[in-house]
Length: 118
Image 1 (cartoon, rainbow, N blue to C red):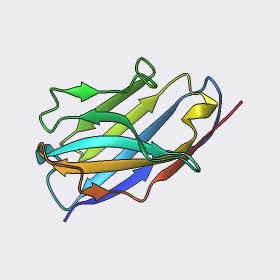
Image 2: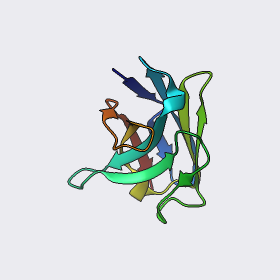
Image 3: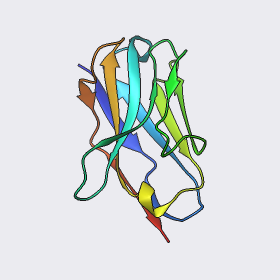
Image 4: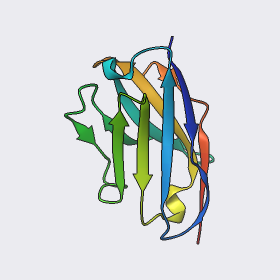
């Protein structure tokens, strides 16, 4: 069983930056692909960033590309998401997800709230 705990959310002004962190326990992080997703009120959960279990592939949607960086530290069992030039549209609950190697995301954290004020 994999447990994920997100942290680092908060209230930030537009143009500001935040770094979200996902702490992983229960299994070795090195065997899991990791992703960040977000859900705004009244909207479906959307993909924000992902890093492969080997760390050799990274993906971002156009909405955050160039403003966000995902990174993993297998020794510390953490995955971070740095977000810059934040916009009000970035507001939402951010979730960390994990999937064994190339399988689907089967494990989720409880989420951390990010609010970007204009």
